[in-house]
Length: 407
View 1 (tube, rainbow, N blue to C red):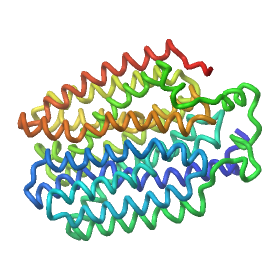
View 2 (tube, rainbow, N blue to C red):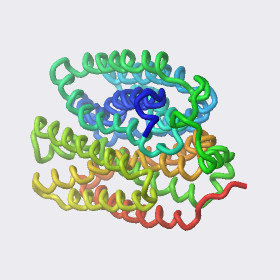
View 3 (cartoon, helix red, strand yellow):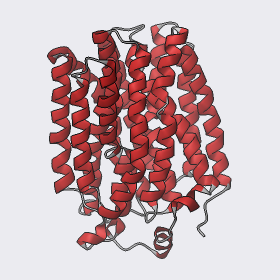
View 4 (cartoon, rainbow, N blue to C red):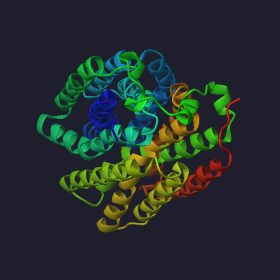
């Protein structure tokens, strides 16, 4: 590949990888610790705190639809910098909560900031820079999310243990601002044409140019079964993922110590990283919907093992198997939309896709929390999640029979 070392697009990819690491560490994986710490500190029920987190994801859902369009139109620099500040303010506020109603302000503020740094923002920032290597580039950028899965919870647990909850949250807030804002403003750019380049570092051939120049409105895209099948499948899959990850610490600590919990989470994140590396190697060569179906089946297998576990060993095995697929559940919808709807329409099409997926997925933490409170364990919630994953594996392949064709 004669484009690789010097093409500025790869600098965008590495910048987005680091931003994804910060965002996932403390806005997706961190809440698993925040819920546990708040429960220990205040005695409030897991279900109540989880509802505040679900409200956060609902706020995120209503805002991310605009994020993709804004990045497509104006670039990612300002919106990612603002998002980092908002996310930091929310995290710092979580550390100061003393009343339940305050959780319903602090968590949503964090969620609003994360909407400017999450999958849609990362994918929309990378998408204009690549055509032939779109799958590899987006997958590599989102490796940062897997690094967040490996290190986010251990770092957060270490900070909470060493500094106390309030000071730890203030420290994390500072890390978010100092880590993201300089990169967003100084490194990121809107598109290669703005600096005299073409996607992939060279002119695209005719087939790719034709694909990139297709225009889709949101309404046209939503009329296709291809997009609807993607939204429903990954909305449900991410609902399961958010529910599982938000309660992962609580689940594991029913059988293992906090130190062992941190090690399991680290191992799970390492497997998620490996899963994303494997996806980056094959994403541009195989049918992406068949890959998605396989990922969903493997995720369901991990959930089944976890739901039926009554000792530490099968619980750990199930958690690790599910963790292997966590990263790709986040990456795959972006790859499907990018491949089927092109670069030019990616921001707005994936923006509306992400909005609907997030509206569905936001229910995950509350569903897991409320089912836990009602049944006394997570087994019922996780068993239901496995059934939903298997249903999604069938639906995403069905979408392959109805490829989108622009009007």
